[in-house]
Length: 112
Length: 112
DNA sequence: TTTAATGGTTTAAAATAACGAACGGAGATG
DNA sequence: CATCTCCGTTCGTTATTTTAAACCATTAAA
Image (cartoon, rainbow over all chains, first blue to last red; front, side):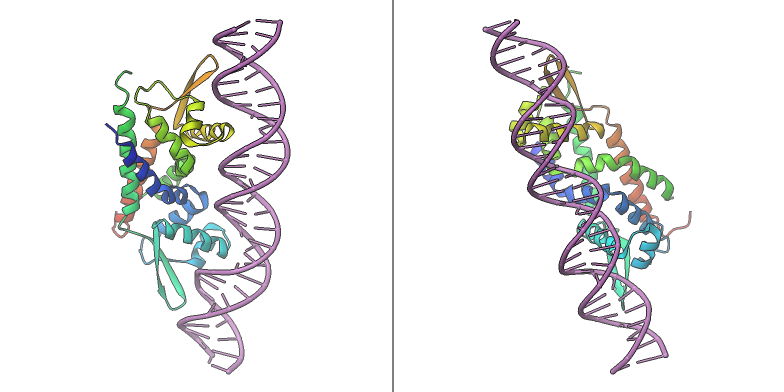
């Protein structure tokens, strides 16, 4: 049977992640980061070009994505190189949540 | 192989779903719906009690959840019984998206 | 028919999020 | 040093979301 308190906790834990992922502009940033096949990181100026967003807007969204632990960056001098984090703890948590929700929905309804 | 245009489309398709799922109040509503073991549906008045939200607020969030195809309802007279949808197309789409993202992140540096 | 109950909607206000202009700091360059 | 680049931040504005009060339609009950 589904453990509701567990699902509740998983929801709360994935909340920032879901909000970060739901925004169209942030999705565009993530796609731009995924397009970095060389995996050397993408600079802020490149992201402003790729997404047609102002620098403060990019900075704003990057912070949200960082807080959600979806992305990270490394600095070289004044340049910051952003990349999607590889140890995807948050994504795994969300996958776990979705699995639990599906299970909860399918095991509760024995009388369909 | 990471197909970015596919991921982009999947992001867009799951956007409403992600937004709907990211809100704390709506999570509470979903948990309340999952707590309905008998699966006979939960009435609006029960949801207002369970979540401490006003009826217009509940109605507002229910509409968002309905638009995201997370929930549905059936009417009996003046009473509406809400429930989580069983055919979880949207959840499957999101699972597909997460899988693709993980794959894109782990195969970023390889030749196809 | 009259009265009560259920719940969606409209409107307006409050809270929150997103954005651009201007600024500031840190490092590179001359 | 002087100046430029890069980029985060602050502040005020705008846009969006969330909310409650009041209202309406539908149905059930008296």
